[in-house]
Length: 302
Image (cartoon, rainbow, N blue to C red; front, side, top):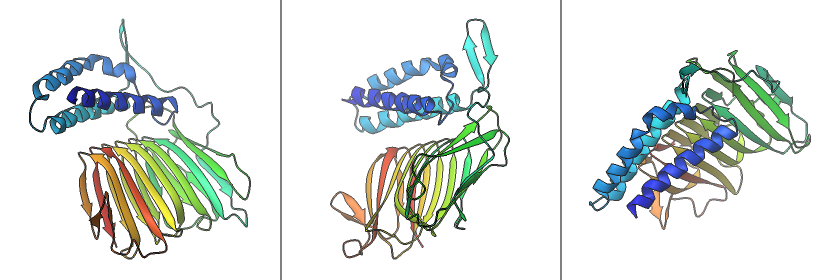
């Protein structure tokens, strides 16, 4: 049983990394992991040692997750690629997507609902509470970052696809400023790797927010819920997540997470979830779903 858990962690790790790499959300250097192949022997040895011990599942999960975090860091930050003749430096290919440092799309009067999928890697993303006069506006001061924006919907029911491209691997702090119009009801999907996301949604209407992140820092502030059920779905690993909601907002928290430090103000346990005292009677409420491992999670009520 414990061997299956260890194997499952490694399959999930490489599956998530490969998926994010294939969709250009992150630029992962798989070649850089070759010198660290002895870690596989360490993982197997740990499984043999702890497989019949008390709390073996917890210990093995911690060991394997720490190894995955280490390899993930090396793959995200390495600038060397290995071949039989020795290491060679590499960088990403030239920008062929037609990106720009500033992208925006105008707001059409009558737009009541909008959706956005944002794919970003290795950046600091800031979204403040100042409503944009545009439906969406994104900009970066870094020449190393390119932005591409497309609308696959129509003018009154837009579906926006925003992608950031890191042109070269370096130690530069990549920054992206994001602004959304406050009128529409937003459905948001944000996929990020090794990024920092600071967002103030207190002036926006959020129906659905999904964040898929690894090795990220998330600090998000929300206003009162605007729909019968506003869903916040956070899928993270090795991340720090802070969620700020008004003290009068009705909330339910559903968690499927291991090795996660938790702090929840004003919640009590009910069945398989935790919720605020006013959740059952409120007309509008938040449903917060947390999935992941090795995270730090804090929910503040202001």
